[in-house]
Every structure is written in C-alpha cells, then in structure tokens.
Length: 250
Image 1 (cartoon, rainbow, N blue to C red):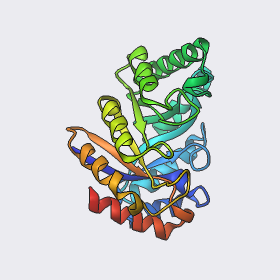
Image 2: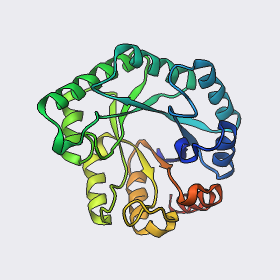
Image 3: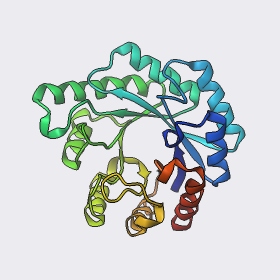
C-alpha cells in the first residue's frame, strides 16, 4: 500500500491546531499524529471532534492519537478516556509508552507491570477497533530491539504494534538493522535528522539513512506511516523543505 507521509503535531507545540493543519496541508502531507499534551488533551471530546473536523476539511487523515499514557502505571479510567478521545478524533491507533524505566534498569516487576498494562489496554482498544502502538524510545522498555520484541510476543495481541525512530548517535547501518528486526510489527516511523546527539539538522543531512529506510517501508504490502518530527529551529519553513525531501525520497 505504500508509505503514508505525515506530521507529528508535537513538532509545533507552539502553534494552535489550525496552523498545524495548514502547515501539514501546504507541505503536501497526508496525515497528522495529534499529540495528547497540547493539541488534543485526554478526555476533551469536544476539542477532539473539532480537531478531527479541521484535519478532514483540509484533506488530511488522522494517523494516530499520540497519547502520553505509560503502560504499567495507567488505570482503567485513563485507558477508557484515551480510547474515547481517539474515537472522537477519528484515530484508529493510540501511541503509548512502555513504562517509565529503561531496559537496563527495569526489574522483573517493572516488566510484568508494563506487559500486563499493554495487554489490558490492547484488549480494551480492540473492542473499539483501535490499535495500540508503542513508542520506540529511550528510558522505556522499548529502548532497544530485543526488549521491544519480547513485549510484543509476551502480550501477543494482534492489535499491538510498534513505532521506530533512529536512536541518538546510532549509525545508519545499525539503524537499518533495527528497522528490519521490528518490521513484522512496525506501523509507524518518526522521521527526523539529529546528529550528533540531539542537534537538529535539515532532513537532507541524513539522506544516507532515510532513503534506504523509506525504500524498505515502500517494499511492504501494508501501509506504514513516515511522520516528520522535530525540525531544526522549530521552523515551519524548514519543515516545508524537509517535507519536500521526504516526498522526493518516497
């Protein structure tokens, strides 16, 4: 089905929803992952419906609800609220975080709690036809590939998937190895150009990574999101340039 391009709304936390939509539409993108911290707060269903309408009016799709739920420390009320918010937003996927500690520091109890929390959330979301996707991120149990796959297999839910993004300072070859290992469960890639450490560069500065990543995504028979995030200087103008490069590589 190809690669669906889009924007992660937290890239422009400083902008109101209507301006975020305009930036994405003018850049020729197809979708937006709406963040739960600023633009679509948890439980505000009226706002979620408004954001959905604005998105659709501009010819865009909702890629996901980017929640900040931490599996293992979320109660059922928060889970229900996240699902209701996603439904109002028109999101068929909710992004969550795999706990609060990294793999190296996690005890057996931490992993059990996260696994149980992911399973419960995936089960509740399945009733609404919604997928749960784990953020691939440091200081969580998805900070490296083996731990991520273990979670996916231990939970065993058909509606549990994972994101991927390039870890800070990881070279291109190692990034591509991670991507390949996670491919059976991959739903979304967060696209940005940081090097070295968290120094933000134009996307083209890491063309050697992103061209092969996008080629690999395009080879899959299902649709996978490639969502731009965190541009240099938080600049809408730079974002437009990055989006043009993304499209040229897709």
